[in-house]
Image (tube, rainbow over all chains, first blue to last red; front, side, top):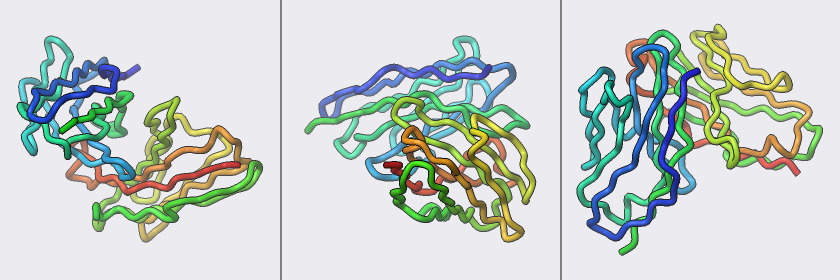
Length: 112
Length: 114
């Protein structure tokens, strides 16, 4: 079946450090890929998305590129802030089925 | 405010009881999805409705059921509750033209079964 694998957390970084959160997927078709963020006590917010191979999604300084050859969608940010502390979820959705399949989430803690 | 409204925000109930969670989708969205988030299982897709019809089923227990009404709001019914049903329950909605482009989530209902 379809699945998403994320790196284990928590990831602890100092402010202004470079962030990478790895995400790989397994899917029977050509999925759309998403990153969602969950701040403490809140719901999930769409951070960025990519719908086909080589697409780059970007938002709020975060970027991720849809790599079909490596079935990956790694999240990156050049300089993290304390306010980026949250749980990040990688997810996929297959055309026609629509329900999102989520990874297990990666907690990011940014220290001042 | 995401535009997806879930009520109640918190619910505490006893084992064996039945509860109903409510979700109002974003204006114009026809699809509603229910997800369960627990510490050990992560985010699990439960069920999807599209314009009043069941569209897809995920890992939904037989003790759970859902429906979507003509005004497009949805309810998730959880019965014969067990301690393990304690979790955050999220509702999400999407529009027809947004398929595969993202989903808007509500802030969730935290269910505690004691």
